[in-house]
View (tube, one colour):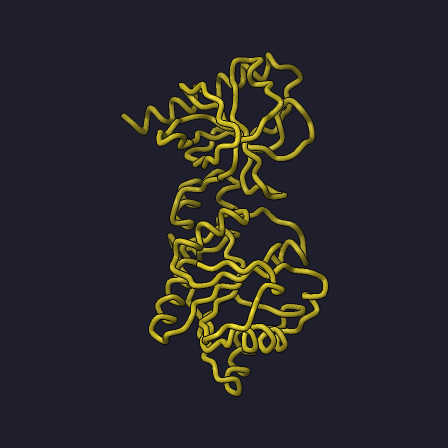
Length: 309
């Protein structure tokens, strides 16, 4: 998959293309269905398959910031597995936000990508003030020589699959429902960074991963697994603000069982297995925090023991 970051790097496509457009946050099973249909159709028509997405998402740019299920790197790796030819990331700006839907189609989709086929989701809107939609594409297609189709919604347990539904499941700790809609267990990846090393003071050293998004879709204490050097370790993590220091950036802090190695700079992925609690309080001293972590560790160990029994 060829990645194009920004319209300034988009050259006129030498051939023709099949295009889908959206946020694709989390790359859930609904997204995968659309992409699969696009790739299949593009091969049948001998077109390049092109996925267009945005950074930041239109919701975060225009309305109010919301939690992201995947940061840029995570979304890129997920999309790379799906057989697409090109991924175009459009960086949203005030100038781009003034581009109306018809000009977006003409200047980018037709002039640059020579689009012959377009596949949209069932709630797709685009262009200035979100005035572009499936009906407008149908009208434009008649004079511009492309075909437009709408993908049907994907249902999971009688609920429409959507990124917003997954965010709700994660918020309330329903990891099973979130996993079913994602098509995989929810995880966060990143490089291990140096922390304040306060965990060492209380004999619970942690590996720390910045979550690389302004708002986390998930907060609290969880039983997790982490793969390191080909071995999967079990552990317990806190995600959110540090429990003994008010303020600061969101951070994923993981205490791994039976692990005592330095792994700074290593790329790891933490997979969230089970929610233990929502940690709302801050601790006034390290001894109180230590006692709570002991309880959290015991709960996580009990969870993993039940899985293996």
